[in-house]
Amino acid sequence: MEDYTIIECDICFKKHRCYGTLGGSAICNKCHPAFQFGYEQERTNWERWTGKSFSQMWKENEKK
Image (cartoon, rainbow, N blue to C red; front, side):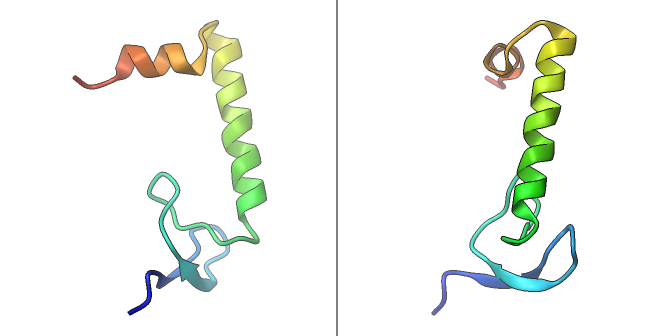
């Protein structure tokens, strides 16, 4: 039995093997660099806008 599933990429909509999801999104290897760049840019912008680090935000919003 395989440990992956065949699923559609949430960006390019082509079928690919998926071993897991990224934040609930199935991203293929071709689209992953652009997805990762966007994620890191969003995180950098958030830190600049709020003046807080990502880890501070995580600790403040962590569910107990």
